[in-house]
Length: 172
Image (cartoon, rainbow, N blue to C red; front, side, top):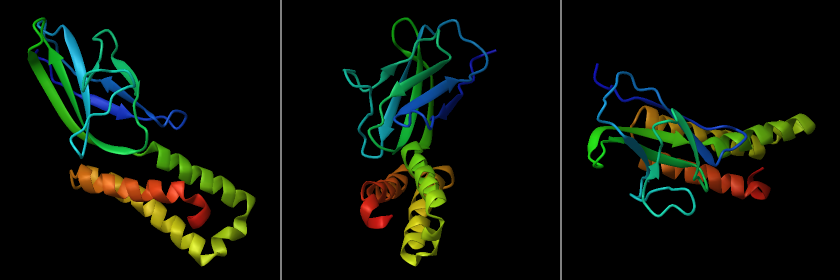
């Protein structure tokens, strides 16, 4: 049976700057000898691990799952995986849009921990409004990708959430 390309993309709360991709493809193709992966931003630039000299990462066929530490901040990206033959020609390719928002999700957990220490903070209408706005940005960023297939607006929302996180003293 020919290969049917498929991947699963995830992030860990413990390492929010890293992205893990698992190859869940079915079938096989004996011509495939290597694989590479691209993480393209909405600006058309590529995220790579520090020291990488190409716009892609090599993903060894022996590793069904691989983790790359390449996110300085949260990003909405177009991930492309190419399966290549011995000559480097593309045998199969797969594209998908993803909202990688673990840094901002971790921050909302941190805010929840602070609320446990000072539960009355939720009675402050400015704090409550800022928290609702912040979480809306994080959730809408994901919705832009899942429902709208729009990494540009997703990135815009992630940038707004990240700004609020970076200006914690002002907003929270």
